[in-house]
Image 1: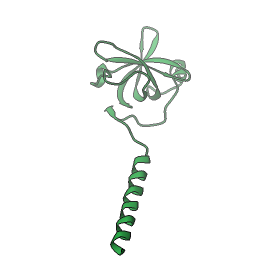
Image 2: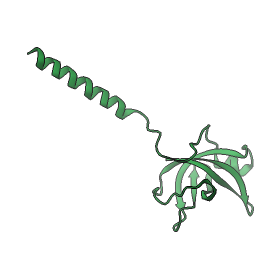
Image 3: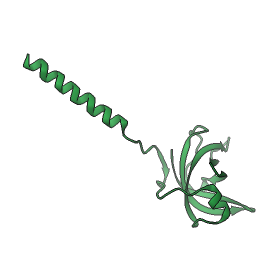
Image 4: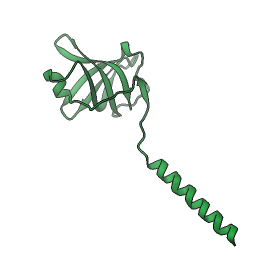
Length: 122
């Protein structure tokens, strides 16, 4: 009888621990260097109101269909192109509409600001 009660208590403890671990926030997968710092908005990048190195968060809405060497991210303020060539990773395996956090350097391509990625979390 005591053994049966012990087994039930042990099972309850293991299930409770499993639930707690399963409820923890996942850090996701990282490509390149992990993005760090508070995200800025795309509107702020376009207005020139950010430092040269920024973190953005949004949905991946378009990507290079051939090599995955660039993508476009959209937040509530706009859309911006992100180039991954110099970062050494591609986004071919990341589905569209995935929420991503990207870190990189703001550069211009023609007259448009572009992010040269250094890292991505999804």
